[in-house]
Image 1 (cartoon, rainbow, N blue to C red):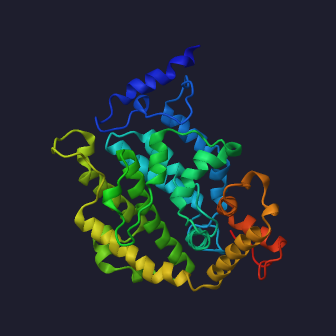
Image 2 (cartoon, helix red, strand yellow):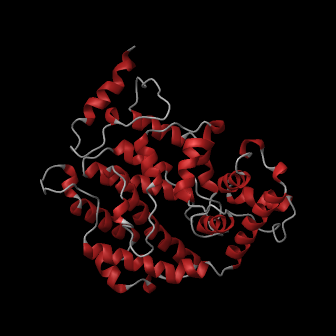
Image 3 (cartoon, rainbow, N blue to C red):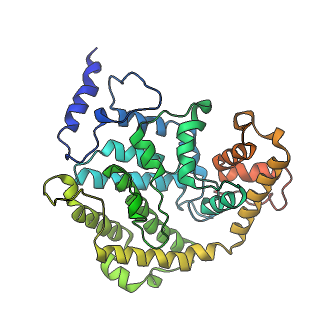
Length: 354
């Protein structure tokens, strides 16, 4: 069979990548060993498994920021994921790193996100005694919940990148630099996530009438540019320039990391803080946001009081509330709204989301 040599040729091609790039043949492997694919590298298989899984499909009906938007052009969790993937691959390609690993991590990083965006995440974190973070749930999706409880059996590098894409710091888009993932490809996903949401959230906020382009901080616009495309281009080019050591073409004597210049990072953080003041914090007081909180709280309480109503695949004898969290976190906005209405939640029979 001619195609049986394709993977070997692809792995040989990876040898031309930067010495700092992850190589699929050197992966730390999967929890359950599998025979290699004749046509795909290990990271390509992971990417394909993520794209074909149910959790990935559900992202198209999950809120990014704006709940119950009235237009067709608002960003959803799926379109955000695709933007992160595109930005990440552009950076990886320029730095001669592994595009396939970058893409797999990017496509899987938000699989565990809740309905109603960060509102849902905050509510589950408040309700579940052990806490809830979407990056940890994304890892749980690929390790345990997909494929009837068998998980996707992804490589170690993709699973680590998914877990460590999220940043604790609320002030800096680079996040907690002491907890960087081990591959540069995963570091690219972390920063591409921020580049994507900062810029598309501005567009959605303008679309929603919360801000205008003239409201954006002038100091940041002077550095980054006055349009969506110019801002992304400036950030991506800056990341490439400042992370050039990752190509292996220059020897700095230090292990390379994926960073921004102080000037561009300062402008990006300025934009991020502006979004918190003028968009995210304002969203918290909107009727739709309050309603989403009530809905998540209702569903959680209902299944705590009626555990026998939980679908069999989410039953967890050792931790019943873990199963409830898994079920709610996996819901789309519309499914959560419809189920709450069916179960008799107050104020749940009006406009559908998305």
